[in-house]
Image (cartoon, rainbow, N blue to C red; front, top):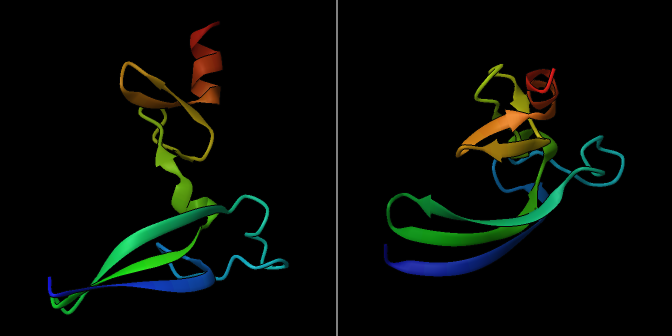
Length: 88
């Protein structure tokens, strides 16, 4: 990679590019984030923006649902519903 630049993409999600601005429906659960984007295998651009709620989600190792709230259990992502059900 030949070049490294920093680009502030404002309220855009660094993963999917959706706008997370106030009123978008994505504002409340967004988190500040950055990422390195590779452009044409010639440039690396460090983008600074946000991560929308959907792009924060990980797959629960038990139920396979995409979840934003989880715990790590034996190095596996487990959602709170599965954790509660395992305690019954």
